Length: 80
Image 1 (cartoon, rainbow, N blue to C red):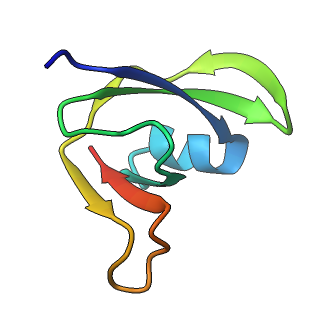
Image 2 (cartoon, rainbow, N blue to C red; image 1 turned 60 degrees about the horizontal axis):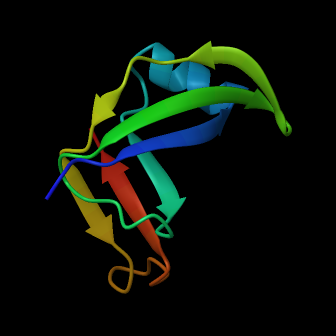
């Protein structure tokens, strides 16, 4: 199976926390079939407008799927 590349929009406050190494996970709706080994590209947005800033890609290392621990079944937590 080939690795997927996911381009995700991220609001400035979260983008900056990731950029500074404070945030190393994403809570996302699992509508893209995220898999370990996939690559994530985080693009900064203000509202719906892209700023043009994008972080270097992250490789998904761990996924907690919804349906357990109070996490909605349609969501997942992605860690890199």
